[in-house]
Structure formats: structure tokens, C-alpha cells
Length: 513
Length: 109
Image (cartoon, rainbow over all chains, first blue to last red; front, side, top):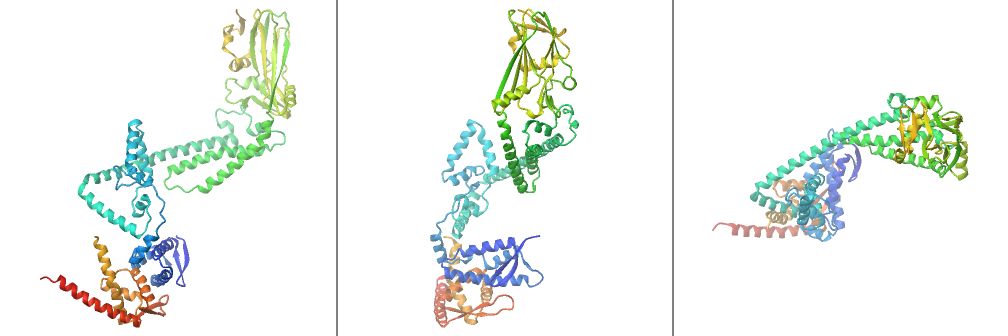
């Protein structure tokens, strides 16, 4: 199926294939450029159009209704090539008229080249002696060895000037009947010369041709492999993301139902009260999936030689992605301002002076104590739980600092939060609930702290620092491992290790001088 | 010196003369002229003809009539003007002289 258009030639309407039309239009404009005198030109062109109309009629007289490209070719054979129209006087004038030079294009010049004509092509392009480029390439080969690779790449990406008009474009000369003639006669001479002097060069040329073909096919097959890898990777990531967002999370082995709050909930916990959290959720999905789709498209383009053109898809996705990112940026601005000011409030609590041995343990708790392994903290999200009223944040930090015997046994609570203003941040801190219990010689720590859900997640955190005089002894309970080890992870400085040893078997710490 | 150029120049010189000879026999339209010239192996494409005819017409040597055609657009039928007739006579004399000259020179002694 081909597109046709209707044209008016000498007052007759013809249906003509688009490609044939283009060819004819080009032909006519070339003929036209042969004639200098305007009045004469118009008349001659009119005659030619009349003749073309007549020839079209002959072509169409029987069973055909549409002018096709081969008809145009035949007509050109009958009427002659553009240069046949020019008489001597026209040609002279034509040369004088020609002041417009065509744009130069970079081609490989195999006629003048030593290997594959790369340097000769550069020489034409920059209008300098190609020797300069040859010397540069040799230098690069000697100095870095990169010259060879660069040359091969250039052979592959720079097309060879094959047709006469390409060769003229390479040299930056105007294309008209004369320059083409001149060029052709030049070639004839060159051919007869080279036929005499080198069979070697022909062999070399054949070799280069083969080399280029092989190089191209290697390039293509490597591209295909990369393309297929892209597709597989893309599909994998896409599947993962879709399962992550919508699917049954348990399918993915390392995310269980108790391990992570779903993303919409997290968003609602983070973004301010009136934010469109569902919209934000979808925006995050779109923003993360579009790059993966690009990866897959790139893979298809690399892997399939005649792949469909995805231009429209690529552009629409780019627009959607930009809008999504803008939306996320706008809704996150307020979120950002809510994190502007950071505050910490410290409170110190004395423990009974007379205690010789302090038992420290964590209150057992269904949610945090039994389901979550503090070692496996690949995501902090797993440590956040929420119900209608409060947000629970798992595992505060516990730090133990040995002090001189003249100091008291005490613990310090450091509560931190952020807010849009200082007042906000302090209010958030005051809302943090972390009920440490002291009874007799026992210190009980809750495994989590909590705050009202209205406060939102604003970087609230609690640290407990226990100051132990070096004549006292601490014994840990069974549950302390969690908080303690996490503290070791987060806050333990190596310098402490020299001041005391941990006997893990009986969960006893003895401070040694 | 390129042989093709010389050939083309020789051909172009006598082309005008030949066209006028053809038209002096009967008025014709370009395709007819082409057929005659093709038979004589003088030119092979029509393109050469159109500029030449237009110029001869503008020089007052040729004239044309529109004649309706059954197959397509009307055709321009060219014929010689009086001036053209004189022009042809002069060309004819020149050609005869030239022909003799060439024969004389190229005749083996």
C-alpha cells in the first residue's frame, strides 16, 4: 500500500504515488536550475510539462490509474537527464551564478585514503592536509594505544562517500552539472592510474570492506546481547515493583507481612494531614516505573534490528514523568519545611545510689520483641508500626558509659525531633512517650517509643545513656540483646572496649580499670 | 582534450540545421522531430530539443500552432517562418561547403 497524491500537470489531474511525485519534482527542479533566462525558462518548463502530461496519458491509457516510480524513471530516460537540457551558453552562466556552496559533510574518502579514508575525510572536512590527522592517529596509537580503537569506531560511524554527490559534499563543492562532470572525468583518470599501479590496494580495499562488515555484525550482535539483557532486567524490575506496590508482598521472600508497612500507610504517616496521599502513592509508582519502561524500550531497540519506532511512547512517557516529578516536588516542599528545625531535649534521672548490681531488661512486647530482628535492618520502615492513634517506633538506642566512682548511677534520656518551627519541634518531643520503669534494683526499658499519629513522622528518636560508676555491676536480662546490640551497632565507639569487657554468657558487664 | 566534449559540440552544431531541415518538410511537434533525429542517431533524449526549439522560436526562425490531441494535452506544432526559410538556405549552403571541405581533407592521397 502506497500513498498517492493528485497533481495538476499542464491542466490535467494525475494520481501519482508520493515517491514518484518526489522524484518528478526533484527532476523538474534540477532541469529548471539549468536555465538562466527567466522568460525562456518558464516557456521551456511549460513545454516539458506538456510533454510529461502526454507521456502520463500514454502510461495510463489501459488498465492503470496511478503513476508509479518506474514511470518517472522511464520518462527521465525519454526526456533525458537534467544536464542534457543545458546548452553551452547556459552552462557558462550557470557557473557564474553559482556562489552558494553546499554544506560540507564528513565522509570517508577511500579514493585518497591510506587505510579506510578516515583521515582523508577529516582532511576534506577541515580543509587541511590529511597528513596532520594521520600523524595524530599514529601518536595516539604509540602513546595510549587508543588510536586503533578510535580508528575502528570512526570507520564504523563515518559513512564512506560512494556516490558522486556524496563525494562532492565531502569536499564542500557545489553540486551542478559541471562539477559532477569534472568529478567523473577525474575518477576515470584515477581509475586508469590505479589500475596500473596497484592490485595490492584493491586487495586491501576488499579486506577493509570485509573488516567493516565483520565489525558491524560484531557490533550488532553485542548490541543484541546487551538489548536482551536490558529487556530481562527491565521485566524483572518491573515485576518486582508491581508486586511491591500492588501484589501479594509475601511472594517476595525477604519482605513478609510483618516486616514492612505498606507504602500508602507510610506516605500518610509522613506527609502532612491534608496531603493527597493516594495521589502521591500513584505518583511514586509512575515515577519509578517509567525509567524501567525506558530500559525495556532501549533493550528492544538494541535487540530487534527493525524495531518499531517508539518515539511517541518515549515522548509521552517523558512528559508524564516530568509532570509526576514536578507534582512530587511540589507536595514535598511542605514536607521539607516540616523538617526544618531540629531539637533535642535531655532529661537526667538518678537511680538509687545504694544499688550494687543493676538488672537491666527490656519489657516484652508482642510486636517488636518477637517478630523483628534488629540485625536485619535493611529498611527502617520495618521498625515503624501504626494504629489509629499512635505511631510506634521500634528500638531506641542504648548506650552505656563508664564513669568515675565518685559519680552517681544515672541515666540520661535524649529525645529528638524536627518541626517547621522550634515550637513545633519541642511539641513533637513532648509528645514522645517512652516510659522507662525503675523498681528496686531493676531498670525496665520499653522496646519502642510512641507518639500521636497527628504528629506525623518528623525524625523523632530516643536515646538512653546509662552512666555506670566503675564499682557497680550490671546484669542484662534476656530481651536486652535487641536494644543493646543495636546500640553497639549505632553508637558504640571502639574506645569503650578498652575500659570494660562484656561477658556475654551470663549477660554481666564488669567495668575494669 | 576530451573526446566526448568534441563529439557533443560537433553534434550540437548540426543539430539546429537538422531540426530546420525536418521542419521544412512538414510542420511537426517535438516527439516527431525526436523520432526523426533518433533514426539518424543524432540525439537520443528529448530534453535537448526543448530549449533549442524555444530559442529558435524566440529568434523568429520558428513558429508554432496549437493542435488538439486525442491523447492528452494540445501539442505545439512547429513550422519555419519566412526568416527561418532563409536561415535554412544559408545553413544548407554552409553545410554543403563544409561537407566538401571535410571530404577533400580526409580523402586519402
